[in-house]
Image 1: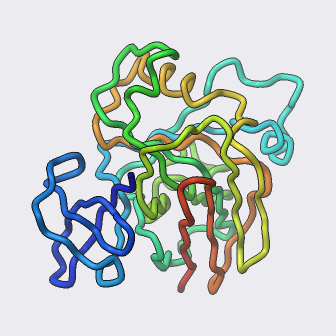
Image 2 (image 1 turned 180 degrees about the vertical axis):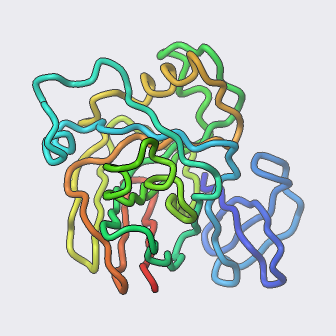
Length: 252
């Protein structure tokens, strides 16, 4: 099932279930059908989450650690987490203004998870029972700010630094999905989620051991190698097997 958040022709934000070429409206993220239907081509898809927080995992693929000059013989013992704030969300197809405070604006394509119900002190074995579904994400990063700032607020959590979408896919096994990022049609990242250092179960369980995840919260699972710069005029797309494609472009 594909769950979408969208804006109708009158500018009203709604939730619904995509069935072929139409969206059947629901009352909120997981509510019952309202009886209203909208043609898919007549709406604008929005980021499919309204999170209180966006939890991100850094350096969760060995090849990404290598390209960032890390020591692959000393892999992390626990997931390395950081946060993006909800202001960082951006919609599918959105034009992201090139940030004025950076000269190194980078893309990182990632699998994202949307939480279904409050999650606190949950075991690895039970973790996926708290997942509503899966979507595509870009962890956009001001790499130079990341290197020099005390915290990563500016580097990771600026406005529109977390494009998300195009929808939430609920019927999916996340353990071995192909993930590919293209910039201007050229493949830059090409990997599988089975190569993550920490599995999704482990990431969610570990996070819930000290932080309550709430319905609608988003967890980004890390990026494989191939990260790089974006420039004005670039079009970037991340495609994840079983979900679809999230595309953005960079403007002035």
